[in-house]
Amino acid sequence: MDELLLPTILPYFIKKAYDGFMTGGEMDLLEGGMSLLEQGWTVLIQRGHAWDWPHIAANILHIVLAYALAFPIGWERGKNYNIAGLRTFPIVAMASCGYALAANDLPDFSSDAVSRVIQGLVAGIGFIGGGAIVKEAGTVQGVATAASIWNTGAIGIAVAYGNLDIAVTLAVVNFLTLWCLTPISEKFRQSSDNHD
Image (cartoon, rainbow, N blue to C red):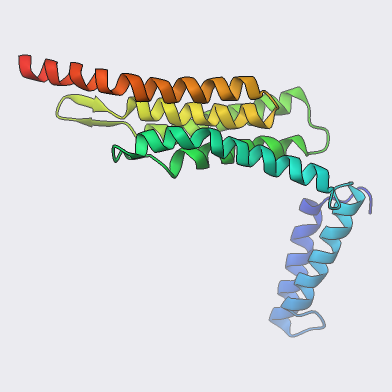
């Protein structure tokens, strides 16, 4: 049983529960679900993840910190009714942190695996940020929002890997850039519109 992992036993018990439910046999859906939970719990205990409260508390703290660091950036973007704002930025940071933390708990987690997790996060967050960019009437808007979404993903990853200096620096510089330079950018945009 030590070699069994939840992903390998999951399809077996789902099929067994489904077959029992469909044929009215000895195992109905509820019994199959209970059996699956029992087997999954056994596997988790054998892998050493049975309610390690200090580890759980540390993970929760990391996720909350990633959320908190991205919140001011989301507030700044949200106050101008941008496509992405108060909800999106903290969620991106929190999710990035969560993915990185979850990957850290995988067995045989190597530097190659860290690289693949980060590559996946960067690509996925880039896709989300791309949705914030809008081309309209010869102008492109939302690039700063898209870059900030990408940055909040980096904040979440930095928090997950314990690089709080990087996470705080990214959060502060991103917020100050948006807060201080957005009014200047707007003035330049208005000035160029008046000259046309």
